[in-house]
Image 1 (tube, rainbow, N blue to C red):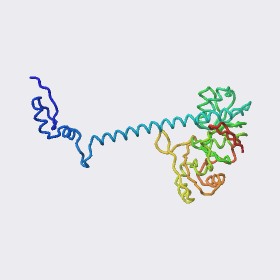
Image 2: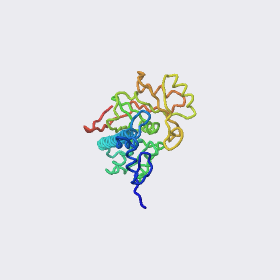
Image 3: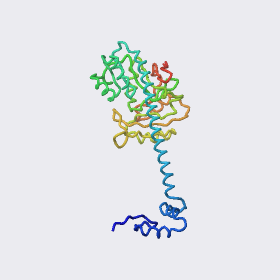
Image 4: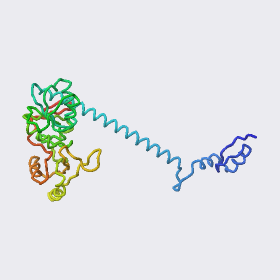
Length: 302
């Protein structure tokens, strides 16, 4: 004979005829007894199912917050890119018949190359500060000269990690600081393009990239600690161990803080240490800084 089955308190299956007996065995309030059986108490006397619901609410909130945060980040990135594009277009107004033109390194320089291609400005020679910029130009079929060439650019465009009101720059976020300095010192007009998030009251309040010879690392640990400075070795992306520059060196990021030292003086002090190749503080080099923001583009001159 076929029987329909129901689940009782002990999670056993019984035929229909036994249901009445089972419900009587549950006491005067069988519905409550069944609920307690289905959702038992934990050691603290709380309903397990209730805690599961609370956990689900928290998990949902965390997921929603993470999604909202990601969307806000993407919106900020879009806004910053728009600001940089405005500054790039304004800065490219300086391009006439200059040849050669220098190009630094980084995402802003790559954006500059794209906009130069749109405006037909790639029909000239270029001196570049990094292999990344060289590859970007090659993607447009343009060959570039490196710093071994004897070409002196009349005009050089570059980005910056931070800029203060005195036009001191932090350079080296892309680990090309030595080549960028050589290019900046060689050029007649050094133009920086940034978005307004890069403007700061004092560049020395932020980590300063310093390119070093790997063999000098331990000596520099003693020297920098003796000066009361802390630093981190920059780790490479896509590989184990320290980042390696185009020149085969390492980069350390030095924390200076409120030491009272001037930007130019700091560079001189650190550069005297054996093994320091260059310091990512650029003082007195920028001719103009083009700053893009929500209110448009402003130009800061030295």
